[in-house]
Amino acid sequence: MLTKETVIQVLEDIATLLDLTGENPFKSRAYQNAARNLEKIDTDFNELVEQNRLSEIEGVGEAISKKLTELIKTGKLEYYEKLKASVPPGHLEMLKIPGLGPKKIHALYEQLSIKGVGELEYACLENRLVDLKGFGKKTQDNILAGIAKLKVYKERRLYAEVAAEADVLLNYLKKEKNILSISIAGSLRRGNETIKDIDILAATKNPEKLAGHFTSYKQVENVTASGETKVSVVLESGINADLRIVTPDEYPYALHHFTGSKEHNTAMRGRAKEMGLKMNEYGLFRGEENIKCKNEEELFAALKLQFIEPELRENMGEIQAAEKNELPKLVEEKDVRGIFHVHTNFSDGGESLENMAQAAKKMGLAYIGISDHSRSAAYAGGIKEDDIKRQHELIDKLNEKLKPFHIFKGIESDILPDGSLDYDEKTLARFDFVIAAVHSNFNMPAQEMTARIKNALQNKYTTMLAHPTGRLLLSREPYAVNMEEIIDTAAKFGKAIELNANAHRLDLDWRHCIYAKKKGVKIAINPDAHQIAGLLDIGFGIKIARKGWLSKEDCLNCMELKEIKEYLNKKR
Image (cartoon, rainbow, N blue to C red; front, side, top):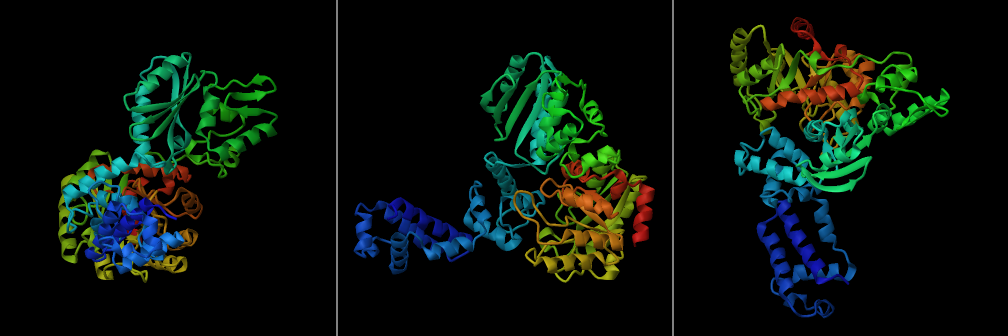
């Protein structure tokens, strides 16, 4: 039989779930009152159940009494299970955010379809709560601060979060004079979308001193392991960090080994074996002899391979390509000449159009593509047709003021459920480029969603497809869609596909980038920036583009200004 404490918890859960579903507040209050009064009674609880006397407890009427009897006698309550199933699981996690109660969560679900913490954070970063009834700028800032606290206890993090913390830690470690070589390793060095912990490899002749320097880092919350070859800590942010310490001679082999991936390392050991060699984190051996390598470049050369960049080490054909010297020269941040998919305060951006353009110019870029939300995206302040004229007039003035820097007139046009674009053809024809994007009806079956997006790609005004799978990392799964069909359609009709560089998206997935490259589809690495800081997200997109084998020739926004003008004019 269930304990009284367990039954009280179920009653409290029901009250919370009713609030989350937007039920009449009197109903949830009845369950709260029943829970409180049940807590106060001294009578033997099981006796009341057996004697059918639960209704004697204040606040426990006939309906609640029946439910409690079912729960206690069977160990389950069908009403409770159905109620739980009706609420997105992420809403329960959202309750852990300070100041965010069930009613606010229900309002967010009703108005913005937010189902979890990740979607909520993304909405805050896009300023979606600023003009939302019952919220505002202060509430949005408080929610973001609460989410930051919540993340301390998460197992996996976004690449951007971990990379920023790792850079600070790495710079701190470099101050130790006994370090001879040091590098980030693991999945962070490979540029994976999400990261479990920070791996750092260092070579020194004084392991003890280096270990002490590491554990003295001011952001260390606690030390979980400490030895001469490995030190593990938990940082105040909740991120785990491992420092592996090796000798200078071991460093090249260890760096390759601890960068991984496991599958790449297994394939590399197999290649070494075929050549009569043995390879591990300590060296590359021919019998007892360790083949001397000063760095990773020499290690790959010893195995008769072109150097394989860390991002490619996933056993996705990189070894075979390296054997034939066919690896591409991967795109670099300096190759980017401009950026598209930038929002301003004409829709849900936090900055003026001029401020965003000036910031892009200061970054050394040659152009920027402004693309505020279209009218159907009412939740994001979608731009009305009258405002389009006003925005275009402003862009013309700024192009005179800022030249040779250039601002392109664009729109992020919603792909409607039937695959048509928001706005009529006359309006769409006014833009230099059109980014087509799915922002609604995410639950369509794969066949319908695929047809919807393919239809949008066939529209003569579509320039590129934004965040093609709709995923939000660690919070929202991609919608059901056949990406190979989408890429094939983009190839057929000469459309570009976006690699959304926002750290929450990183969508197109790098595996699909490989396929798109084979099909000759141009990739636009876009920041989806809603404020000036968001422009810098382009670096995260570059990391994923490199994982996807992309060179600058594959990337739309690596074109020079004259070239991109010709490209866009031709597409129109």
